[in-house]
Length: 45
Image 1 (cartoon, helix red, strand yellow):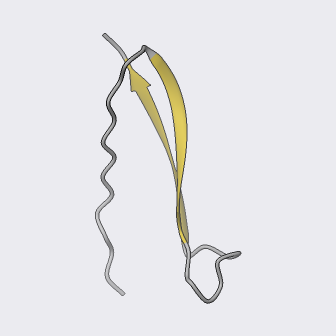
Image 2 (image 1 turned 45 degrees about the vertical axis):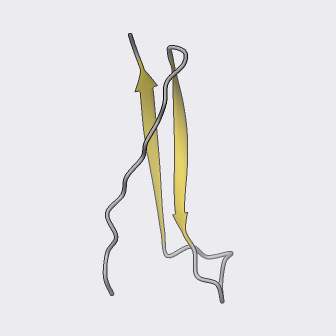
């Protein structure tokens, strides 16, 4: 199994905080993801 690097590109138009959930799902079993990662992104001036 090879691991892929995570990369998140954001263009911030307003100050704020949000959370993104990345899910690595298999096509044959999408209800049970192989991995999940929560990323919190904060945009500041």
